Amino acid sequence: MSLQNKVALITGAGSGIGRAAALRLAKEGVKIGLVDLKEEKLKQVKQDIESQGGEAMITDTDVSDPKRVEQSVKEIYEKWNRLDYVFANAGINGTVAPIEDLSPEEWDQTISTNLKSTFLTVKYSIPHLKVNGGSVVITSSINGNRTFKGFGMSAYSSSKAAQVAFGKMAALELARYHIRVNIICPGAIETNIGQNTFPEKENLEKIKIPIEYPEGGQPLEHKAGEPEQVADLVHFLFSDASNHITGTKIFIDGAESLL
Image 1 (cartoon, rainbow, N blue to C red):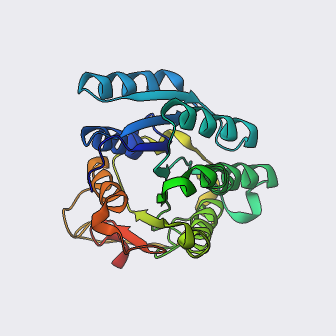
Image 2: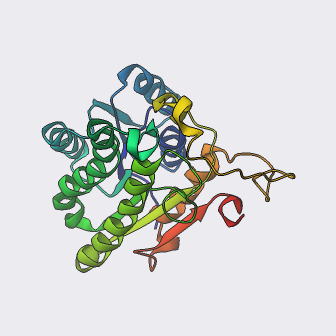
């Protein structure tokens, strides 16, 4: 089945993986609801989509705010009268610090932005996805799932592990409505997530354990992955080529997390 005229909601759509997925899906004729807190970046993505003949709309949304997420989903659904795909991709690294130095507020910010936003995005999309069935993809990480050497990233890794559990629960719960839910776990990807990191580097030395890979840390391509490579995986998980895949955690990291 073609993706033509289907509708996708993408959070964190203003840059990186979200932007790449929006452009990739738009090329296949998917109408894109662009959701992010940074409207200026969304305007450029929308322009890029429209310049290649696609359709897109923008909702400037704090994805950790229930009312704003609910309204955003509603606006996208009402624009095209359907919703087929949801890419819950928004996230931050948050504050990087030893556990004893991490404040409860900093912990909450990371958990809320990463985990709560995933819950809200999926929750408010379900009534619309149930109409025709659909597919949900959640962006987790190798951190908290296969690697734990991100010193100072306890909140981030916890949120990413929890996203996997949530995705598997959702996959089972929503299967009766023909809604598939899968979780992708990227490794190092060339994105701007570093801009959403609030490090306390001076405190990390007390918890770091020396790790050194003389030949580098990305065995397959010897460099970080590209957002477009992740976008190809998202496209696959939305397409009928993956119509029997749900509740699955997929690593996309060039074997980085196997070291």
